[in-house]
Image 1 (cartoon, each protein chain N blue to C red):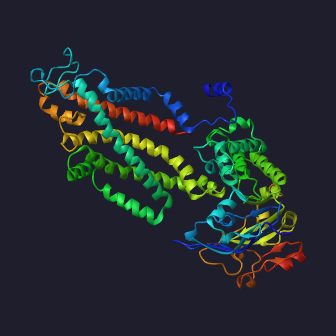
Image 2: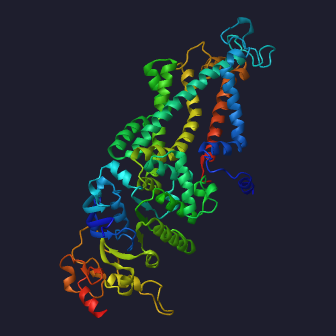
Length: 295
Length: 325
């Protein structure tokens, strides 16, 4: 019913171009779970960006006399860590690094992987073989092992862990991009576009990209949570960020020793990782259904 | 009068795991403003002929021999740029299944506008304006709203109209129709046929209309060419071919339709199955299924013989049939 009333209320003018993404956004906003996740993520991201202006304690400033205070201590709402640093401040500042290493590798892998996958899928033949077999080599290793191995070989550091995570996430994205492209390429509308005079580049840019970007994008968003967990894992192993830098994985590691003394404070970084990754996952689910114009 | 499309002795052979001799010497001459119904069963080479005409067969797996001329220009020697200008500009094509032939993630208006922009170099807004005019031409109700509709939001008949619109947007001189009504139900089918006929007259287009349904071919064609196993076995004006079918295969096709069948009698079927095309056929391909087969059929390639009024038949019995009929 709502569809009919909407049609009557808004008879669009001829020049109106209702964008594809505007439609996706409209459908996404109707889904309460996606909206809730988006709000949570937005708050965390905003807090991380605005951290210096929030009037928090210095995240590096420790104190021997107020170590491992429990949650709810006046002045330290989330307690303090094993060196007496304010947990709230460290979690907010930690969000900066954690989100950075969680999002950037997936973003880079999305760009590189999509290009490679579309080329492999669209050109086919030897090019496809060359790209896909190289990707298969990377596939032979479990992603955690690969990330640890590359980071270990290159040495600890933020740049190296970014690099290793990017390399880890390229192969699955290439796989998805290639398989979606192959199925799109054989569809009639690609033939129809050729029959109406579209060149190879136009077909690849407009028709192939337009149809494959959605599924790949959704898949990539679901990788963000995996990437964050892997990044945290690298830091936990001492391969990513180094102390005293606040980063959730690293904090989890250093607070490990305090788990019997003050378990709730020790669990906080883990809770943050959990909340952020599940929000990204649910949001990508919402995005998947919102992007399916056929439903 | 110079034909706008002239195909002569076209051979298409697909290589790969299995060799397929898809076309074995096809000749077609199509005059400006003429509708040719290309009739034949599945695998007889109808669609391959259309795709060869647009040079849309995969180049690495296809052997193409013979000559194809559109407006006097040799299509076989055109480079990719010239081919792109020809496709959709001079020669356009509509497909069997409009749901699959329209891109699901773009609106109808945007898809048409894009083709217009490509061929006429106008702005996108002008392209959309043309799309709107065309939607009116193909009689889609409330065209302004349909411009912003996605293919899945339209009914089958409306999608096929949109497909036709997309093909005609740049005013082509030749329209290739690859079974455009097969996927539609009967009432919509006749509407689309009438629309095509009307647009063809309005635009003065030449049309090659591929179908396996002789009833549809009769509805729209000026001339009919019957294909079998990659060859044209009979061609002529609609009247000649339907009234005096001279190839045993054509007669079989006509006998196997409901038109003119009597209640209580069984429909006649053609016995046997079409030949495998992994070897180039020698002699008449239809001879194994033919009731009037003789030793002369298997000897060599049988030429198309004119039995009057440009009615051509590829059969050793052609002369005799003419006298008897």
